[in-house]
Amino acid sequence: QRHDTPLLDLRVLTHRPFTVGVTIQAVSVLAMMGAMILLPLYLQELRGLSPLETGLLVAPGGIAMGILGPRVGKAFDRFGARPLVIPGSLGVVVGLAMLSRMGEATPYAYILGGHVLMMVSLSALFTPVFTLSLGALPAHLYSHGSSFLGTTQQVFAAIGTAVSVTVLSSRSTSLLEAGSTPAAAFVGGVQWAFGAAAIIAVGVAGLVLLL
Image (cartoon, rainbow, N blue to C red):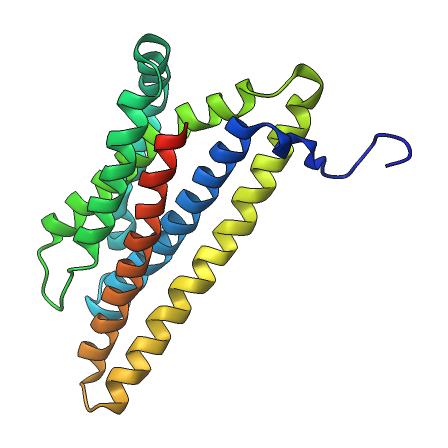
């Protein structure tokens, strides 16, 4: 740097709490985006729901996440991060693990429960981690930290989508070649993709202990 005007200032990574927080958010977004791509594919391609019906089924999770955002902030101010991020990270793992057990005729209530659990847990996770991450930076790096967080989320959202679809396609193809029906092969691919997301989320549960 000759003029101290980097496009993306990497000095933010010299602050350990920020680095840990960015990693947690990146891995969480990776798992979340994979799930957000997989669930509509499952509901529309296998279960035959319309886009409207699919939207109505996943809407409660998004609404719950939005409503809980301010309340999570108040709880963070009162109790600190650990009572929120540890249960939140474990809830993400459980929610993804539930979705990895979906079959060809899984009740919609079960799917709704797994999705809502995942979204509520992400709400408990994101706000404290974001606050702790930026709070660890000196004032002159605030804008760079915010830019770095946003950029990282976008990149890992794309990676999560690619990884999930790749796992789904690879597993489905393998099962088809082994003689499974198209429906069974698709379900097997979805289960493996959600299982991969759950395994990734386990890493988040480990990382929150470093905050």
